[in-house]
Amino acid sequence: MPIRPDLQQLEKCIDDALRKNDFKPLKTLLQIDICEDVKIRCSKQFFHKLDDLICRELNKKDIQTTSLILVSIGRCGKNINILGQPGLTTMLKQGLVQKMVVWFEKSKEIILSQGNSKDEAVINMIEDLFDLLMVIHDISDEGKRQVMESFIPLICALVIDSRVNICFQQETLKKMNAMLDKMPQ
Image (tube, rainbow, N blue to C red; front, side, top):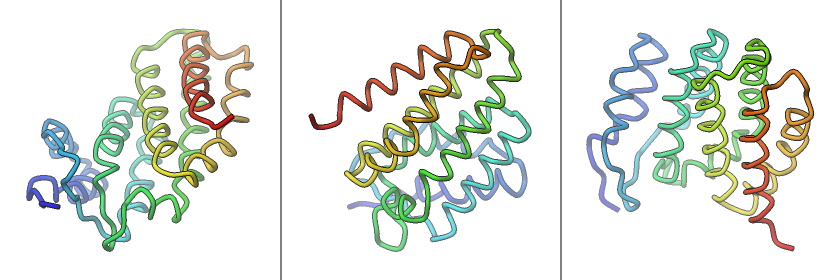
């Protein structure tokens, strides 16, 4: 697989965002078309940097930036390569789904802090989180199993929570149905 130098900057973009709070390189990276046959090499620390960055931004309640990071990983995820192994599979083994549960819980806190109001930016962030979750879900049988076991109870709890705006509940149900549709009978 060819390696495009510009895409090799994904980890550097995450580093810049984490250390310098500079998200411009990540925004620029998102404008690049990513071909399926392109590898994006990352170190074994990449997953921990990513988690630190997302948790920091969620703790700050920086919805736009959190969305940017989630979209970046969703778009580049299948191309990430960690120590010669498929990146998402490696991150799955490192506890990606468990970290995503934490991200989901932090996102739910943001949703609940909104009261019953409808905030498009928050809806978009939740959609971006679920889009990344679907990428993980579709990557392997292990991804499906972990996502289903970890998220179905959380999704159901969110959907029945009367403090959550119906728009969030509807989006959440759509993603749960998409996951269930892909499960074997």
